Every structure is written in structure tokens, then in C-alpha cells.
Length: 191
Image (cartoon, rainbow, N blue to C red; front, side, top):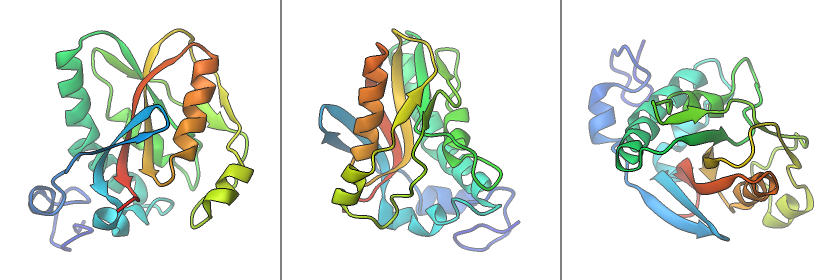
């Protein structure tokens, strides 16, 4: 296959050269309400890759981006804090044959971190892409949580824009006694 960035031959969707030169993560932190959100790229840096979200090749791209960012992050995090932590993807609903968020959370399994696939799903299937903040506020995700209570967890999503979805997810998890430590996203849309 070819690298989705430079189009050279590669076994992965993003070749080693592009991983090193173009897609080296630059961690960004921001507060959304009481939730700390850690992102690895500005949205504009990986927009062309993220737009493959619901295409057949999207699962490879999201998996490879997670291997570059989320996997090393969770390994380092669990080395410094070896207590058990759950990984909860925000709405891991399958669309077009796979869930892009599940591709990301799957890479985060370690002896001290366990993904809870499909534990937090939205009842509202409206898309927020290109919508205003008011639209997002008027149409909440209405999450349902089916995982264990009284655990420590890290939320995972692909993009943080306004942070409304992450805040709503955090509130739903709190109702079930889940302590959300922070959230991880691939990209931050706030430039």
C-alpha cells in the first residue's frame, strides 16, 4: 500500500519517514469545564487523515495514528502510575463496518489499562460536524453507560472541538461513580 501522506510504498498507512518528520506528536492540553483534555495534534495538521473516518481505509489510519500517539502515552502513564485504569471510548458505535474510536482504544491495552469497548454509547445519532455550539447544546448525545461503577477511567475521542461531548460523557460517567482522570484526543480543533 502507499503512505496516505507522501504516497511512497509502505506497510502501514503512514510510512516511518512521515511518522517521524510530519506526524511527531506535539501534546496540547486544555481545560473543558473540570476535565483536562490532552491532544496530540492541532486539527489542521492531520485533517486530511481524519477525513477518512468512515471510509474503508479509515480503520488503518486511525489504528496507525493511535500507535504513534495513544499507545506510547498509555505505556508511559501506566509505568508512572501502575494502578488499574479503564479506557472508555466516546461512542464506539460501528459505522461503515468499524468504529474509529474503538480502533484507537484497542491500542491502549496494557497490563494496567483495559479498554471497555462499547460501554459508553450515545442514544442521539445526530452528527455535530460543522454545527454551531448552540446546535450542540440543543442536541445532546444522551449517553448510556453499561460498564462497571466505581472505577478510574480515561476518556478517548478522535477530536475535541467545543468539548461539549466530552463534558456530557464525563457527567454520565460521574452518575455511575466513575472517576474520569482526563480525556485523550488525537486532534484539537481549537487553533
